[in-house]
Image 1 (cartoon, rainbow, N blue to C red):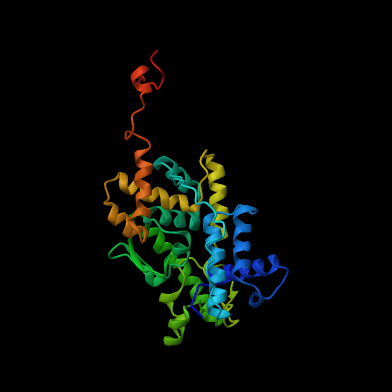
Image 2 (image 1 turned 120 degrees about the horizontal axis):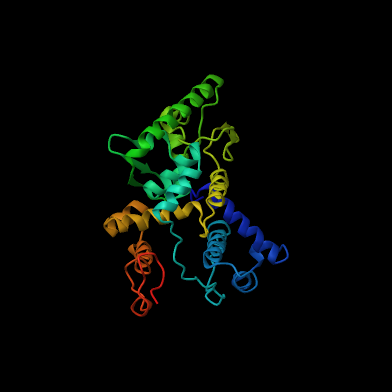
Length: 316
C-alpha cells in the first residue's frame, strides 16, 4: 500500500504476528490502545529490546491500524519506552582496515573496499547496478538509500580496474542468462510498469548478482537477484577472526572508519554528511566525538607525572 521494501514488509508482518500471539491470538480489531501499550512495555521491560527495535514494532502497529484496519491508534505515550544507549561507533585504524581487506578475497574484498572507500551501507553496495557506475567522474549513484534518498558518492581510483573485472564476470553471466531466457532482474514497481523490457537489459543488471536464480515474491517469476547480505557477513566475520582483532567489527564498521578517517584527512563535515547520506548533521558529528576522545586531542595528566620515553615505557 505504501511501496515499502520487501525487508520492511517482512519485518512489519513479523511484528504484527508477535503482537497477535502476545494477546492470545485475538484479532487486532478487538484490541485497544491499551493492548498496544502492554505489548510495547513488555518489549522494553521483559524482553529488554533496544529503542530501535521497539520503534520498529511501534511503526508496524501504527501501519496496521492506520492503513489496514482504518482505526488509527490514540494516545500510547503511557508505554514504557526502551532507553537509547549513547554509544560511540567502533572504528578501525588504517592498518587494521588494510589487514582486514587483505584477509578478504575476490568479490568480498571488492565489496569491503567499496564500503570503506565510499562509505556505503552494506545493502547500498549489494544493490548497485551496472548503470550506477561512472568511471569518467569516479563516482557511484546510490538509488533508494536509507530514507529512500538518492545521492552521488566518490569512487576511489584504485577500484576502477577491480570493478571492470567484476563487470566482465557479470556480463558473461548475463549472456548465459539471455541465452537461457532468464536474464530478468528485480525492478521497482514504477520502473517495471513504465519500462517493461528494462528488467532484462544490461544497465539494470546487479553488480553483485547471486549465483542462483530466485523467485520474485511479487509475481512468482524466476529472476537473478543480488547476493544476500549474509553471504558477505559470513566472509567478513571469518576475516575478522583471522585478523584476531580485539574490536568487535561488523561490515558497518568500515563505514564508520571511512567517516572518521575522512574527517582526519581534513574533509569538511558537511561533505562527509552528504557522502554518508545523513539527514541530520548531528548524526555525522558523532565521528568528531570519536576523534576528540583519543590521539592528540586529549592529553592525560599522567604524562606530566611519568613522562613516556620513545620506547613506550614509563620514565620513573
